[in-house]
Image (cartoon, rainbow, N blue to C red; front, top):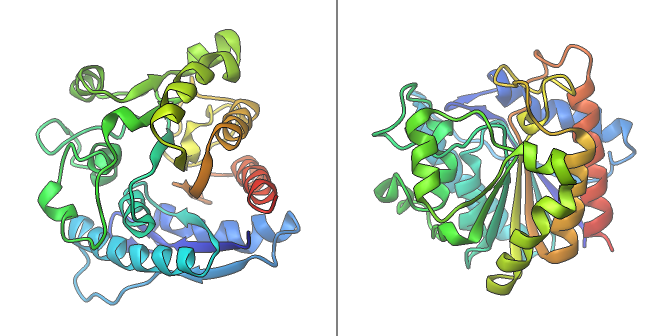
Amino acid sequence: MEIQVILVPYDSGLKNFRMGNGPAYLANFGLKKSGLSGLRTKEVSIDTDFPLEVGTTIQVARALASTVEQTVKQGRFPLVLAGGCMSSIGTLAGLGDPPALIWLDAHGDFNTPDTTVSGFFDGMALATATGRSWRRLTATIPGFRPVPESHAILVGAHAFDPMEHLLLKSSAVTVIEPQAVRDGGAAAALEPALKRLRARQARVYLHIDLDVLDVGEARANQFSCPGGLTLSEVLDTVRLAQRHFSLVAVAITAYDPVQDHDHKALSAATEIVSLISAGAQM
């Protein structure tokens, strides 16, 4: 299947700001160096005179939903390179029937407006994608339907806000922390959960926030931290997702080139894209 690379150059409602610079950088440098420069690309952009972290992000999600929907109708595979994780709600809306969700991230992204202490909208992305928060707002995105929490697996998260962690523990989201992967390997840590999920849903949207990588492995953004996954563990997780499910879309998010002084995060993202590309074209 031909891959359609969809660039979403927004971070916190601002275009080409901080992690919003990542999508173009990945496309212009990472993909070219990997020999994937021939992939079809399209940028999602909106016109706004008054950018808002929440309001503009939702506008972008609506535009992304339309782009993903068109991509799928044209028989192409959506590979989304986005500045922020809240892009996920646009991708999900464009896919139609909600797929299952495998979410790789150093953070829980499971805050709500009532639990967040930072107010960071992207810190609520997984909670929003699963219908835990911002329901009225996401209802304005054509086609969006939340993924049931029992159809979501969060991999690699370990940097939690206290109330966010409590919410996750009380939810039906399956959480697989890095230590479980380190102790027995990705297959041992993930396959039981993947097999349970596969019994419920065959289609998966794979969401990869690059700060799931341990900061010693690569610094993807200012939120990168110790205790994360190695690149090898991330690649193994992608392979397991490919083995057990039909991937309907993949997103790589939250890359800030300014933070990536040694280009290790760029190299990691390129390896991930190469693996996804090989799987999509089989």
